[in-house]
Length: 263
Ligand code: CAA
Image 1: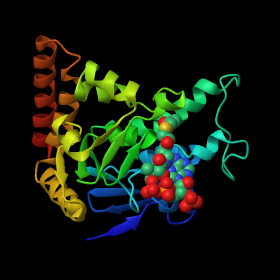
Image 2: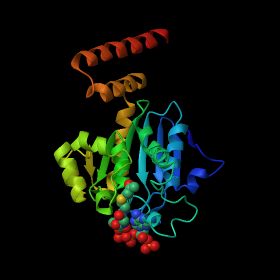
Image 3: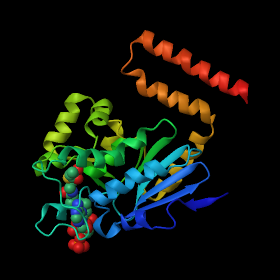
Image 4: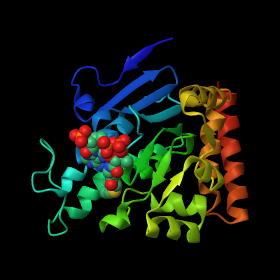
């Protein structure tokens, strides 16, 4: 079994409050700012995007977890103060010419988790607020500890959720419930999250790592190439007609069988 950190030389990820360990086919990304409940900064979002660029081709499962009592308390609220966060860029202003590009860069820290090359799993304990809830939503699957608390806090702070969370939220809970959750900014506990399908699994807090390890093992038990083609198929199903999806299935099967015939 080989274990390797992908960013061993520069420590840039560590400086951004991130850890990355790749062990065989599993990459584990850890938010490492527990003293601030893993509050996020632009540096952390850019670091996440860099992690996405560095995931080796052989990785089949990416686990996102947070160190300490909370998965992630959302944006570092010091970003909104006059002093800001030491060493970090200021919150982009819509008056800046690069406003749109700045936010697109932050969103890139989230969108890579949809790559069909692997399955992304959020392991959530304690609070997942705002940007943290959106990070859990950016993953394909969520495993929640029974102390998890999810909250889309942005509208309470005069913001919209802009880290790609609105689409998966609507897809998972439906439009009326998504409106209710966002526009009340209320906190959803783990049991309700399970009922709303915001969690594939809710487990006792002490069993979170073991449950994620079990799920990871199950995900690795299927054929790697078939898993990639199947995730890509499932991702496009909602936007396709039945005829389009049937055609996509035929094409995927053809690619898969041709590749295995060549091996
Ligand atoms: N930003 C900066 N610091 C934070 C933080 C945040 N979001 N969340 C927690 N911290 C810091 C606290 O200030 C505290 O620091 P000190 O020890 O120096 O006082 C430390 O982390 C521990 O926090 P608590 O003592 O509050 O810990 P707790 O376990 O009692 O509560 C919590 C945890 C419920 C997450 C609470 O800290 C909290 O409500 N945090 C703020 C959450 C929030 O409103 N986030 C913004 C969401 S909106 C968003 O994310 C916008 C976006 O997408 C762009």
